[in-house]
Every structure is written in C-alpha cells, then in structure tokens.
Amino acid sequence: MEYKQALELAWDELSGVAGEKNFSVRFSADIYDVNLTNRTILSSSANTPAKEYLGIIILHYLIKKIELKVLPEPSGEWVDFRALEGGEGYYPAFKKRTIDVILKKYGDMPDRLLESARRFGGKPASIGDTGIIMDIFEKVPMLITFWKGDEEFAPEANISFDKGISGIFCTEDIVVMTEVVAHSL
Image 1: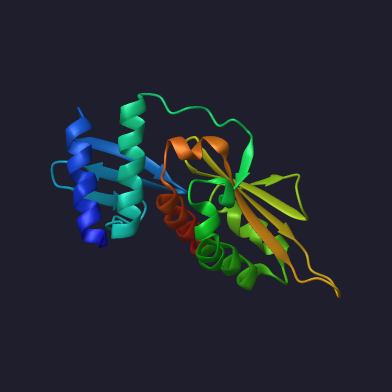
Image 2: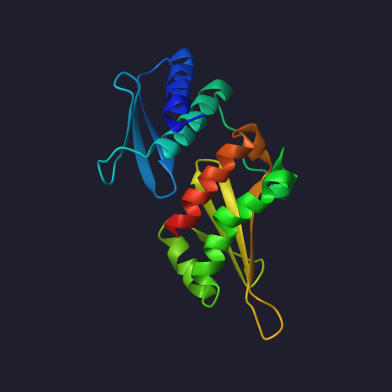
C-alpha cells in the first residue's frame, strides 16, 4: 500500500472516532498540529507539513489514543523488537533501517549519541556503555543501548520498547517510527 492510500485510510479512520477537529501531538521534540477538517498535519516548530510516512504514524497514534481514552502508563519492562508480532522475521530489515544507522553514525563516539538524543528529550539510562531513553510520543518510550567496541569486538547497539507498545502500534508503524528517530539523531 502506498503512503498516500494509507494516509487517506488513517484520515478516514480518525474521522470515524474523533469528536474534535483539531489536535496537538508530540512526536520526539516537535509538536504537530493535526487539523481533521483540512486533513493537514503541520510541525509547530517549522510550520511545515509532516512527511506522509510520519503523518500516518501520528494519525495511528491519535486514533489509538482516542479509542483507548487514556493510554496505558509505560510498564518499565523493555522488549526487543524480535519479541513483537512478526518482529523475528522483520528483524533484518529493522536492524538495517535503524540500529545500523545509529552504529554507522556513532560507532566510534557513543558519547555523541547521548548528546544528540538530549536535543530530542533523551535521558541517560544505566544500561550498556551508553543507554538512552527517549519518549517518542506521550507514553511511548524507546530505549537505545550502545556498547563500545574494542580490538576484539565491533561496537553494538540495540533498540528496545516498552512492552505496552504493541497495544498502541502495529509492528510496521514501530519500524517507521524508529527509523525516523534513528535518522534524526
């Protein structure tokens, strides 16, 4: 399915559950203004439209938030991407689109990863050589764990999610959301 078609389906679904016409949704360090009447999603900081793939994720999040009325609090229990539905089979593509991007950029300087993540609200976590927790959406945290390389081993990284993420997003949405974050760091 193309982004345009998926975006139209998400707008239609939001129309079916929303009682309001205007919403504000925080994604990473930006606020997006969602206007159901005009079917627009604008970045508050740049006053530019969201890319289609990001718009789909924002709309899916908003739909679930409306349907649930209150999003569940994060459990604090982290799960690996492979533990998500379909995650094992999709993991090579996920790794290439997310983890490998982070390793390529920060493999020799993991401290800069933390500096970069702080611009997006990332906070240090006591895990690995460098651990970072980022709240991607309200009540949707993501954990990036980084291990420095040495003469014997190359640097490694992992991305984990609060176990409640499956109640908010499908696996494909999680991949796209994580890819956006990985490229923005």
